Every structure is written in C-alpha cells, then in structure tokens.
Amino acid sequence: MKELTSGAELKQALTEARTIAVLGANPRPDRPAHYVPAYLKGHGYRVIPVNALHTDKELFGEPVRGRLDEIGEAVDIVDVFRRADALEGHLDEILAMSPRPRIVWLQQGIRNDDFTATLIEEGIQVVQDRCAKAEHARLIGK
Image 1 (cartoon, rainbow, N blue to C red):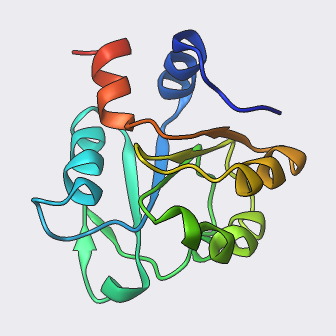
Image 2 (spheres, one colour; image 1 turned 45 degrees about the vertical axis):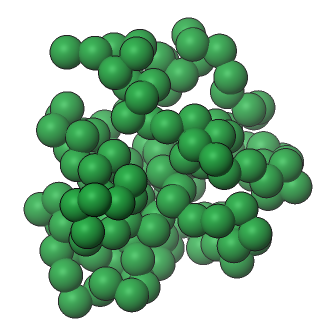
C-alpha cells in the first residue's frame, strides 16, 4: 500500500468508494467537518459521522458514532477532520475496524508522516493534506 497523490489515484479512490466515515464530523454547518461531508452525501456517498462529543445527534441521515471501531461494517474511506497531533490517538480504533478501511483521507492542512507510515505498513492507503470535496469537484464534478 502507499500514499495516494496523483489525480488518477484520487479519482479512482473517490469513484470506487461508496461509504465514507467522517472522523471529527461536526453538526455546525459553517464548519468544514460539516459542509465537506454534506457535499459528499449530496453526491451519493453514504456518510457515517464519528465524533465522541456528538453521539446524541444524527448527521447526514446517520447516528453519530463515538469511535470508528463502533461502525461494524465496511467503510471505503475514513475522512479525517482532526489535528495532526491527535491522529496517533485514533490509530488503534482505525486498525480495530472490521473490515479495515481501504483508505484513510487526511483533510487539507493535515499531515502526519509517522501516522501515515504506520497505516501503509498495515495495508491501508493514505491521502494527506487534500480536501475530499475539492478533489471530488475537480476530478469528478457533476
């Protein structure tokens, strides 16, 4: 596995994905962790929100989960809206997902090379420092 960087790789990832878990999903419409997954939902993806602070809510037609490893079903992409220094704290729950996601996507402004290297060693592809909404609009559109 590897880090996905080319337009062709990103387009393939977004084209093949059906279910996206959003780590750090936010109920506030003015936050990127809300409007990016809302855009993805509007383009046909199933979006599963994950945020331990909002488990009493429903977002994007789904109950908010407290942890990624609570999902219990296949997820194609884990889209991450967490600070780079907080990522290591989510490594165990990503690796405990069953089945594991094919891709972990770190949103624009988020890079953590050690975290990425561990995921790649574990067979999970990674995208760093890219906005899923912007890449979808650029590569797929509609």
